[in-house]
Amino acid sequence: MMKRNIKYMVMAAFAAMLMMSAVSCDDADELPPMNDGYATEFILPDPEDLTAADREVIQELQDEYNADISSN
Image 1 (spheres, rainbow, N blue to C red):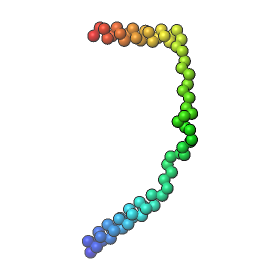
Image 2 (image 1 turned 60 degrees about the vertical axis):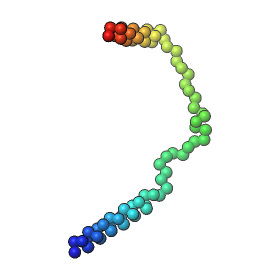
Image 3 (image 1 turned 120 degrees about the vertical axis):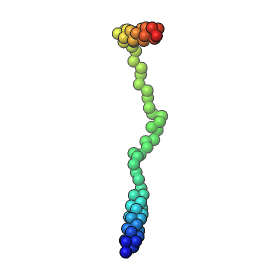
Image 4 (image 1 turned 180 degrees about the horizontal axis):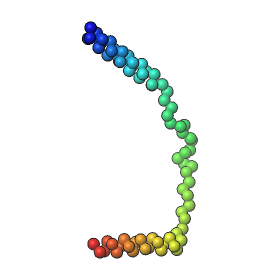
């Protein structure tokens, strides 16, 4: 009797998996539609010039880095 119940449970599980896989394979539209010309219309932003204060901060960081490297 136990083998018969296990057999029906396995068959029911297989049928349930088969039905779930058949229903889940509908038209999956997960991505938004592609726009024409998306790769050619991107414009890079104009670069910004550094100010004197920015250059000074960068120079201080470079000097500190070079001082730490030379001490090793």
